[in-house]
Image 1 (tube, one colour):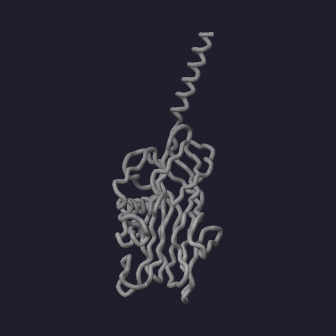
Image 2 (tube, helix red, strand yellow):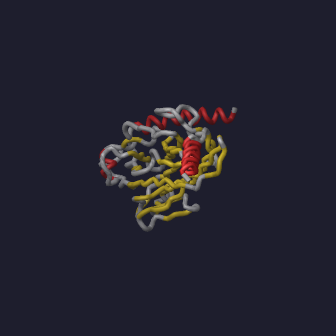
Image 3 (cartoon, one colour):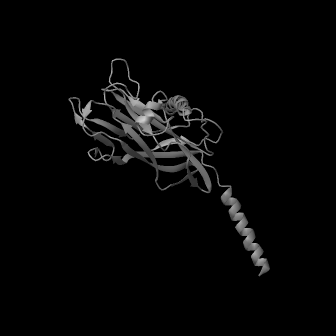
Length: 263
């Protein structure tokens, strides 16, 4: 019996060793699908299979809206195993938000939750697709009155900008595959859009100073495209404002990645 016990212990140790030394995943296929899963107040409408929020009474140009555009699926992305910012080619296209800012009256959006479903499948070495996981991005929105003083800066001669604030999401969402932990990070790939907002804009949205978001010009449609990375360790972001710089860097990375695929 003692001998058998030793054999079982040895076999268990061998199995654990094999499990803990599973081959790391080099490449993934990623499918991202975004929908609006919560919003306020009543009077805001949801359409287009959960991808478009619309609000307000048109004064001639139509309602204001926040619309989601989902990327083609699946998109291949390599795992970043280094430290620091992932270099060129380590980004996958994710959802794009478009805010159409029209002059309106009546009810306007104040809160919303963008839920992005991620389906990951290892392609090198190949493996089964993981069950879909969901990352929630909570936002605050302010349809500003078009009168001074403006809570958000606006171009000269234009009415006050509307305010979009990102409350949660973005960094170091984790998952386990074959005994190893990986991290998903979402970034804006247009760093000139998402940035640290003025204190007046944060205050208008009811959040603390130093909030991250963007403002939009009346009568225009503003796009906020996102990309995502998969890494073997957490990405350390020194301060929220760094997201804008990272977005610009990853936009270049995405361009290089697309060129490689085209070649």
